[in-house]
Image (cartoon, rainbow, N blue to C red; front, side):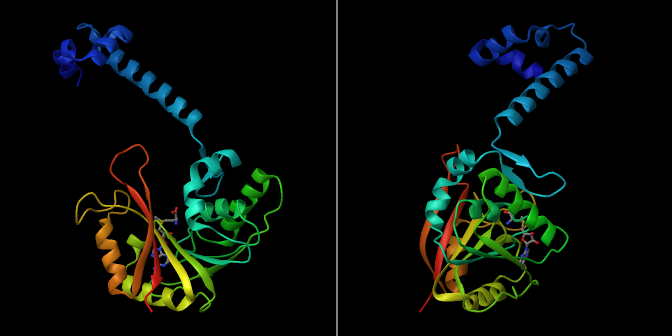
Length: 260
Ligand SMILES: C[S@@+](CC[C@H](N)C(=O)[O-])C[C@H]1O[C@@H](n2cnc3c(N)ncnc32)[C@H](O)[C@@H]1O
């Protein structure tokens, strides 16, 4: 890599700058050990800097990422919160809730919402984990959470949630993991109130057939996901595209209603 840099530095101002900044990387006689040491130090400094700038921290002895402050939470999730528009007394389900960290963050910003958290993996998803997430945000917001939670263990084909009581059902980064999408969508339709909304938050594929970088299951193009839902009795009503720093959308929250 360094040889490549050396050849092109004359034309690239960034590389010329890096030559000034880290001269030993450019000295022919510099030993490999020295170069490795320098690169390690740079990587460590970048890592420490990135940790310092992070707005999220890992749970202690528990899974999930948690906001460092309510200010960070509101700043980063503001668009999502507006899109979900949780209202007092609403009943919300989250399918594939796993660590329950995102739901607890939403709960911290709401009043008197009833969350039903569902997953099929009782290893990560259990009462101790959900209580940790809820307690974390109780401390962060400095007052007790008025939105409570219940846990429901489902299976690959059904959620085991109570029928027809949900104003909103969320599927956050989990739809692509469903092995039985048709059965799950049928089950969820039965759990939503007649005018209830299903929100699917998914990483978008850049080309058809792409696999998720983490679990290697298939992820979908925007229109492919809408088409799957359409074939299973749902009508697309709205969407929130999350671009981060890239110009192409990388994540989207889709909102669907049951077809009448
Ligand atoms: C990538 S994790 C996402 C967890 C969490 N929603 C998040 O965004 O951090 C996917 C989760 O979906 C769950 N899952 C997979 N198939 C499921 C199904 N049929 N019903 C409910 N949950 C399922 C897995 O157990 C896992 O916890």
